[in-house]
Length: 249
Image (cartoon, rainbow, N blue to C red; front, side, top):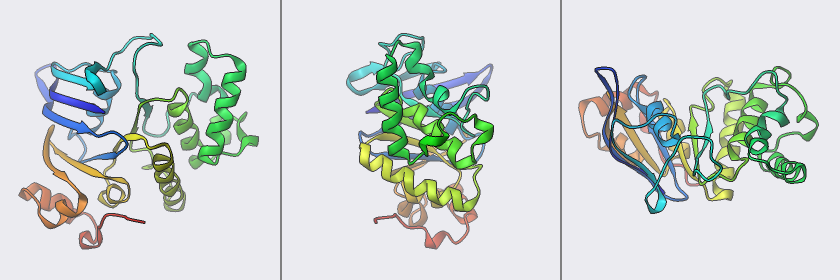
């Protein structure tokens, strides 16, 4: 569904990513993990079309290039940034509808889609006209997710969407997110630092180090058969790594 082909990204004289070959399969969840500065968020920005590769190509299914610009014809993934990224001067509903309004959706179509998304994400409809400051952390993340899903994107990208939440809210949203991915049969690429969270969501895990791929596979493969000392150290730094296992329920 979404592929990086021999992609390299530089800022000045510094190579921050690559060369990287990466495939995110259709209707599967791919999780990118690794330490800070390993290139995870750069991959999402490349997939989103916010930055362009210096070498290589980022393509969607059937070799459609991921494009920037403001054309409604461009194929764009949905994007959930760290901490939600909501506009504080807009209500929840206005945040969700902003892109669709720009591209000329009718009020009836807007209202219908927001209603669908509230039901999907279990967001209380009586809070839809509140401002972000009036919402809980979990509610803000649900609004950010609804905004990302508003225009029926072919791919959903999430950059550490749960990192700032307290453990109880995080666990609840993890469960809801995984159910949403399954219900929509979405192609998902998620960034996290947490190997246990990767095990909960991932069909496939890509561990990055210094802008290149250190190992790919299941979490169980990383735990039981690390490809390098770095992989073994990264896994060992997680608490109780032996307890990590793919979630099947």
